[in-house]
Length: 329
Ligand code: SF4
Image 1 (spheres, protein in one colour):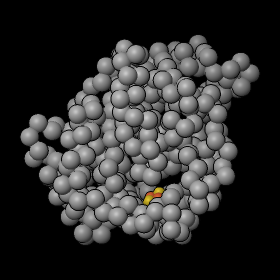
Image 2 (cartoon, helix red, strand yellow; image 1 turned 90 degrees about the horizontal axis):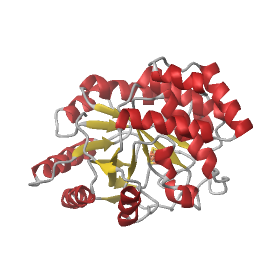
Image 3 (spheres, helix red, strand yellow; image 1 turned 45 degrees about the vertical axis):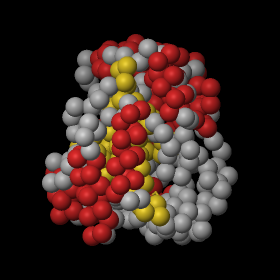
Image 4 (cartoon, protein in one colour; image 1 turned 30 degrees about the vertical axis):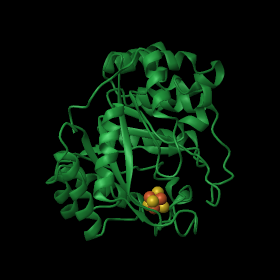
């Protein structure tokens, strides 16, 4: 592990055999050395600071896509979530509330494969309303599914600064959990958003049946192909009525190992822990920072509730972590 640490600290990217060697050591001796190293790398890059973000649904439910984990999917989970839209005023209020909690970013998230003309107009209008709210300096992100080049340019011309679009898992495993759209479509969208000048937030979901190879492949694709500004890591919360309702939850130590491995592979990237933190990590939630995370979401997720913001802020205070804003897109 010491050699690996020196390699990362020298700015040399880890190769697959390095990563497999780390995993083998974790399997034999436990994750402690890995967690120590990930914590050191986090502190070298980010000091004792964290970034918080929050999400608000722009359009919820009634999704045409068949992602097996998702309560909003009509093919996979009929009737679990009804279609709803959040008004421009409500989105703006959510941004004010998020800012007051210390969030430096708010993401407007829509269900669906790709935005309609109305969806695009609505999210741009909501972003404008947020930007015009006095004293509400918050970075605005959008997550609207697949984009054409033209749509990406329209978003980049608005007050939206970053586009969120998860790859979710490895290219190899993706068809096991989604068949209604493709990995290539996702990569095309990320390229369009980046070329339009938007910042990129792209991560994954774990606990959907993927292997360690899939987790490593996703991290390497992020590092070598996507090069995102921010990587959100989500951990499955099985929702009754979805095809993954009976999936076995990941163990807390396995989750911490995933986070730490991502810190080693992506040492300079903002790694944020998003959905599934509370129910999967239980009493070990605060360990995400020791495992290398540099931020987390605050407030509720789209279809599951999070820990109260007050409990999150107390946790950060107890860890002597300072909540700060983000300066880049
Ligand atoms: S993850 Fe997104 S695209 Fe997939 S079913 Fe859910 S809302 Fe639709």
